Image (cartoon, rainbow, N blue to C red; front, side, top):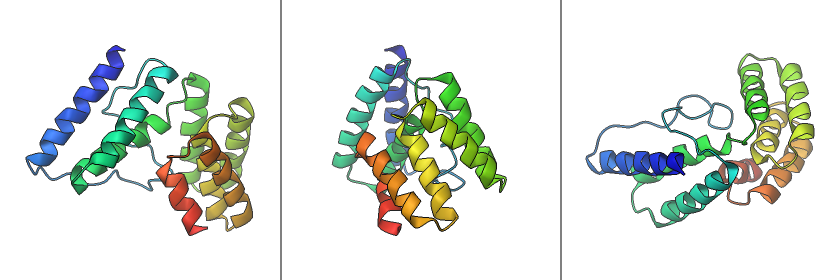
Length: 165
């Protein structure tokens, strides 16, 4: 629960900075692949993560300005990559490195293994959808996006990918 409080405090600080009109850009890199900035502490359990995500989605729904919304989106993206499993988190990171390093075969092997290990991990399905889309395998991308959205229907990057495909 301590991490939950820290994360919420970070969000409040971020929201205050937004209202002070500090310049803040979007996360660098391709949003579908690169993990958002690691300056946010992760919750200690998946249950805490899910509770926090519920609260953040509600705050995002109520947000009235683009900067606050962007900051909430960044925190949500950071939470999507947290699976609760050190192994799964490591595999997801390695798949991202392989994608960014233009090694799609390696990325696919890693993501296939990750999905086999953690089939309920929405972000693994989303990353493999991104890989399939980048290889113009749109049918496989849509299938993977469908899995991601069944697991986390509010995953707006997966929804964005669905619209693109």
